Amino acid sequence: MSKIGLEEKIIKQKAIDFKVEADFIKSQSFYLKKDWDSTLVYSMKQLSKKNSKALLDYCHYFRGVSFYNKKLYKEAIKELFFVSDSFELIALKNYYLGALFLELKEYQKALYYFKISEKIFIDLGESNNLENVYTGIGSVYIYLKQLDKAEVYLLKNLNLSKKTQNNDKICSSYTNLANLYYEQYKDDLAFFYFKKAYELSKSIKNNNKREIVSRNMAVFEENRGDFKKALGYRKESEQWKDSLNDQNKVWAIAEVEKKFAVKQKQKEVNVLQTENKLKEAQRNSLLYSSVLLLLLLGASVYFYMQKTKQNKIILAQKEELDELNATKDKLFSIVSHDLRSSVNALKTSNAKLQESLVTKDFSALDQLLHNNSEIANGTYNLLDNLLNWALLQTKQAYFYIDSLHLLSIINQVAYNYKPLLLNKNISFENRVAASVFVSADQDSLKIIIRNVLDNAVKFSKENGAIAIYTRASEDGFCHLIIEDTGSGMSEAKRQELLKETVLLSKKGSDENIGTGLGMQLCKSLVHKNGGTLSIESQEGIGTKIIIRVLKIENNG
Image (cartoon, rainbow, N blue to C red; front, top):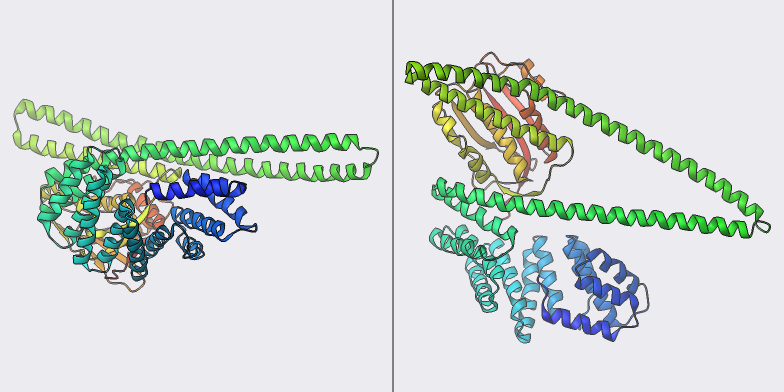
């Protein structure tokens, strides 16, 4: 919820009314600055004192909103329930309760509190707050599958947003309506609002919103079959996403620097405290000689413990350095072995290409160009796997678990393999149901599917077949299966690939270069997402790669 004039005005007035309460003054100041941790600390200090009813209400309200922004939803609800019905910001209290129950998927409770908040804001004539309430009610009705009611409230939200002339809010309103119509298969209306949101996003500075609207346009155009436009929107979305990641890195570095500075100051304080104690001991040495002996003994124990602690830190750093060196050796091994093989193959192919140009053997030219394309594609995939594996090993990979539409994810990955499938005349079938949603990190799930699909294409012969589907399970997981009719593998090879220590593999008899890095990366990413990976295969018949990820049940 955005900060609005009513809330800020009232809170600042309370700072004047309770100016003698230092902890309350600090609490409300940090609240207005959105420093949620500091707000929680000083509001708790104020609650530990004897307070009036008004002070209690504000402290619990500050804590409830702070927990909400820290995504500690159950704690936030407990604090807001302590706020009395005579609280001056009772409308905002009910709005937050509605938002909290919406996050917890308790939709009837969310609707109840949103409705209370709506009535109060209408009576107060607070249109800024009504925008947020209408968005919340519309979202609840979408989850309850009452789409007509959802449309009414989302249109109300759009009308209020237009009155405030806030492009950021208007863009969000267009996006909400577009998604609603998209769920109802009203593609013309959905496209109309998706397009308006996209055009309006060009005039705002919210990169996150720009990334969302570009991605929405890409998915919409993919579903309409216009892959050229979809690719353009997809690239634009990735650019905004990269921009957001850069911002996040800057903020993360700033946060680390802040913590380091605080730690250094604390060390200085500790040193000064120790010096003061020593000076006091010297001044009173004749009277407190026995105390001095105890202090010396305590100091000896302390320094011994510090030395032991430092030794443990040094040992841990050494082990980490050993792991990094081992990782470095593995990376050099891959680079020296596989990249050299790929570049050498490309060099040999180019030499043949020159000979064919001289002899004007166009049939050979076509075959050599296809070979060069496959070599370049394989080298690119190797480098991409190498980068992601290195990030994973050095614990720099960013993970965000979210609800993902499995069919859309597979379609996005498979789109890039259409030329390779056509070149080898391989039939491809995606039989994943549109109703399947899984809980996973989107980028890592794409990397997993891409590597498995890449292997399926690589080891399939011409006129082969590849199918992707899910298998029923009652353990709360989705079993995603990628099956091909390729060359398959022996039991020994299957066991070797499933070992956690496998990194480099020998070249296969069909001259396909394989390092095992892609499969190692897949296993690590699957485990990172809380799942498992297994293989079923027979030589000369084909292979099934089974990816087990957490499934999200459809409550609708």
